[in-house]
Each structure stands twice: as structure tokens, then as C-alpha cells.
Length: 207
Image (cartoon, rainbow, N blue to C red; front, side, top):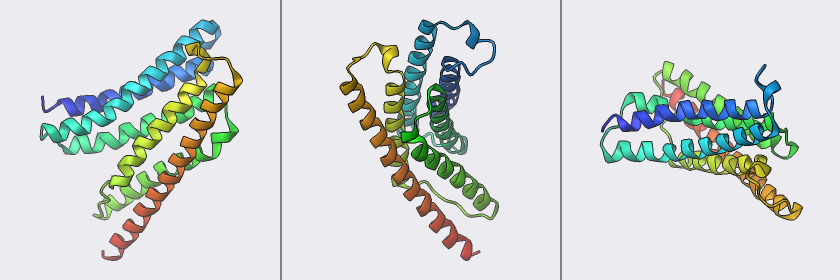
């Protein structure tokens, strides 16, 4: 049972990759496959991608919860968990962009990606100098907010695949909510990135 949290974390890595491949294929971004897909196939791939994203996002909560519940925290789990989060977030952003670039979320999406890679580089550099940057509570909420925002964007991107209302007012309202969540997620993401930067500078001055 104590291996279950790590299994869920590893599963998130696989599901995140599957989600991206489905979105890329639906957008015609995979050579050879795209030439044989019908419109119905593309819709089905979008549906699979959305469900995969939701399942992966749920495992993000349960793997940590189970690790604490079963007293099964491990170094391997601590390494895999943030990697799984970043693969899921980055895969969703790139997949949404492949389906149809949206100017409204291009900037917040780019800011999220820059922060994620920047903090990863900062952690790697810090680790080489013996500096640890523990995950803050706000950073955990940041990940949750990112997943909710990207889930909303994926739903909007696959709106017609689910046969949802074709009323422009309904779709427009859903789109505005999704975009608003993306901007909120980007702002919180940048703030946590700044917190890590300040913490890293303070820690490195003591070395």
C-alpha cells in the first residue's frame, strides 16, 4: 500500500503525456495520423484528452494525501511529484495552443511556462550549492489554480466535441471565465516564483 502514492504520481506522468498526444493528434500535429482522422475522430480525441487531464489532476491531490495518510513519503515521490505537475501543466498549455492559438491566453500561458522552467532551473542550481527550496503552501494552491484554469480552457477548446450549447452567449461566458482563471493563475504563479527567487537569494548569501 505504501507504494500507491508513487504509483499514482507515475501514472500522472503517463496520463499527462497521453493527454498531450491526443490534443496534438486532434490538431493534426502528428505526421501520418492526422491525414486519416475524421472530424468525429478529432472530437473523440479531444474528449479523451479532457478526461485524461481531469483524471491526472485528481491524482495530484490523492498522491500527496495518501503519502501523508500512509506515512509513505519518499525522496522518489518528492522528485516525481513536481515533474508530474509540470508535464501536465506544460502539456495542457501546448496542447491547447495546438488546437487553436488564442491571443487572449498567449501571455498568461507564456508567463506560467517561463516561471515553471525558471523555478526548476533555480532549484537545480540551488541543489548543487546545498540550498533547498521547500514547496510553500501558496505554491501548492498555485498548482491547483493552474489545473482548474487549464481544465476550463480545455473544456472551452473541446466545447463542440461535447455537444454543448451552440449559443454564442453561453460559449462566450464560459470562455471569459476560463480566460479569467488563466490570468489569475498566471499572477499567482508569478508571485510564487518571486517568493522562490527571494528565498534562494537569501539562502545563497549565507553560503
